[in-house]
Image (cartoon, rainbow, N blue to C red; front, top):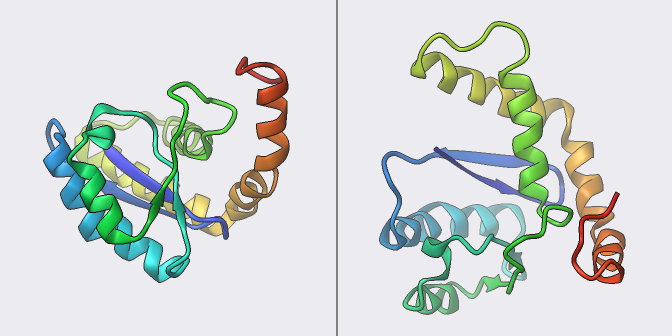
Length: 150
């Protein structure tokens, strides 16, 4: 399993996650990877959007979020038109599974990393555009009362 963080400039960072993840694992990831990545790429004034996965919403994690001074936004549990990372996973998946299928786990890891490099080198404008059109998509979702927009 991989974790992906995306920035408004189109840069993505991936981190492989080993095993079943618990809130304590996410807390470690948050403090050792997410917060430093945000500080390095955005600075101190930043918002974090994450899905409502149980390990992201554990009550005790709120203290970590507050201590980090990263504003973690409340987020609807189903928001496919607003979740930029879902679009990124689609781009990566298309690249990974185009052509010869991975022959084993190491080959899959290599293909995922190559796909992430392609996204970072050739598709950053697509991700930037998703950030730039976020407000318009949000308005459309609100007008459709949360239903999927086309």
